[in-house]
Length: 400
Ligand SMILES: Nc1nc2c(c(=O)[nH]1)N[C@H]1C(S)=C(S)[C@@H](COP(=O)(O)OP(=O)(O)OC[C@H]3O[C@@H](n4cnc5c(N)ncnc54)[C@H](O)[C@@H]3O)O[C@H]1N2
Ligand code: MOO
Image (cartoon, rainbow, N blue to C red; front, side):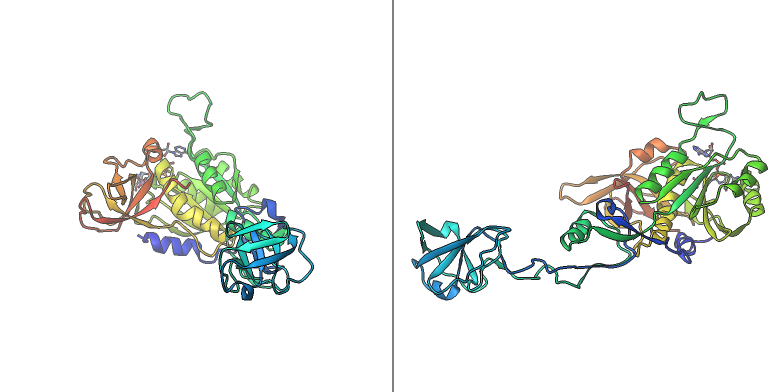
């Protein structure tokens, strides 16, 4: 069986980012840049004051108790257009342009003003409280590389660089198909042997949080005609995710149906718990990931394989999930050949260290335990028993 990392590699390799589109910067949050963002101006645009006070010539302030003549003011948005000469100063505010001739700021706490006479109580070296033109970024510099997901900070810097638009990759569209005769829509009357379909909405939420667009397709019953009908619903999709029917029971039907409509299988079954019956292939060139039906397996496979694939399709360079470390808060048993992802609570110990406490029950149908978990503890294949206090690797869940 393939390892988790080999499976991830095979899913990610060959994924091509979606086409670029131009969107308003106000709608750019969460999107991935298709082109680098270059500064359209210098920031700050000129030398500006970082404090409220008086713009002075440092050469005048080699001693304290100097008296200067106030010749004007430079409020933000209204630069003083004269020149500060020897023995002169200009009233200035945070963010205002430092007038010609001045090269330092005396903060108002260290000055007294009577009419147009200012007496200072500090010395000043050139550059004191002056933000240099372009010290944050200079016109023409790359401020955001291509392939970066735009968060609030990136939107802020693009706005500061005077961009009203940004070129990003189109959101990938992901078809989600649940399979199984037992599934009802949440809220439907539940007949004998039926269950509410939790996985479709759970994965759709995961997909949306990853910045992609979920397309919830009609569920496929355990009949060949439903699987064959999928071939008419694939237009405009960048990826297809099937749920369930991946283990030995219904697998042949799902795989057979998908093959009949053109799927070229890549792999089926990996050394992972939960998530063993993961399936990957291409359907007329489009990537297809089949996640197992057990809800926790569907979520874990969604987190480990579907979300990174969507990040790559959206053009992102660095794809998740991020691996952190924590201290084990409980002993754990030796592992078998499958890489295991244990649901766990996270706590801080008395010294502030992150501590992971795996639940004793890990049945992959127990969705409620997943919602009570803040992390998945990763156990390598064949890892020996680990003791409370040992380090472990985790994936944090509270961000999704
Ligand atoms: N003989 C074997 N049996 C099983 C094996 C195996 O290797 N040999 N693997 C087990 C593992 S591991 C998993 S995981 C499951 C996965 O099975 P499938 O992917 O085929 O999923 P289903 O059989 O369709 O369903 C399993 C379980 O999940 C429920 N389910 C399915 N879809 C949904 C949904 N959309 N929302 C909520 N719940 C869903 C379904 O009712 C079943 O209870 O197979 C093991 N068996
Ligand atoms: O993937 Mo299954 O959920 O390992 O039991």
